[in-house]
Image (cartoon, rainbow over all chains, first blue to last red; front, top):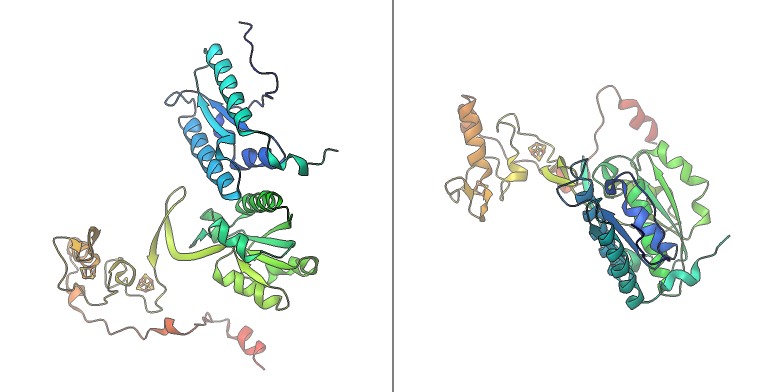
Length: 115
Length: 226
Ligand code: SF4
Ligand code: SF4
């Protein structure tokens, strides 16, 4: 499958979404990313039983932290799919990109100094 | 362990409003275990403060240092060398730790970032329940190991009161009556005579700050007293 998804998305691979920590998500936004989303296996299908459920709890927690800070919680989202669903992956990528385009750039970007 | 909850973000932000360089001190013991004020919670709070203050166009520099225990003088020593680099301190320890830091650095404003809540047990990850009010005269031996000071709405030493209702406390049908639980446990153990024994009222020593000196350790206080 040669599916197209938006080129501005940078993929970071993790062994399981359960590995994704609150600080990983928070730090991405702090460092100027416009949005972050976590793509995990379907709920009920985690090889480690609860990794994707824990990830969802953390995503929800980060969303509320961002709201507290004065940013849009919707800059962080969680999606689920099964590993065979390439087209769904591409569809989620487009959906997230549209969501972020609607929200506009991360206002923290101007504070980020790149080495 | 001592269980705490992080204060609401707005409140913390308000406490350190006007300061531009703040040191956030975490505590690696009780509040780290109950996920309120350890190294990770320091990192999360600092990231939030950094972002919020940038959005307000008044950036803040927040340092981070998590010590083993803020209620132990020896672990506070590493703060001595850096405290003067900061205008104020946030502490994520329990109230005892916060006060020990404030006492060590009386020239520096020290602010709490958590609300110290109770002495409790770990029921599951992130789930804690109160079990003891540190009344200073423990009656668990008489009550089948169930604390009436904590679990009874009236803190009765000699219960139950007239409000006990088929296992529930009169305050709510979701609240078990502590003295009913005590009765059931003592009955199972064949120790119901225990419930008939009268426990005199607590001296309520907890109305004043208490001091404990363990046997065999009298010297340290004596040495420190002029
Ligand atoms: S009686 Fe209850 S409050 Fe008092 S020391 Fe024992 S457990 Fe703690
Ligand atoms: S009903 Fe039971 S728990 Fe409630 S106040 Fe009376 S003795 Fe205490």
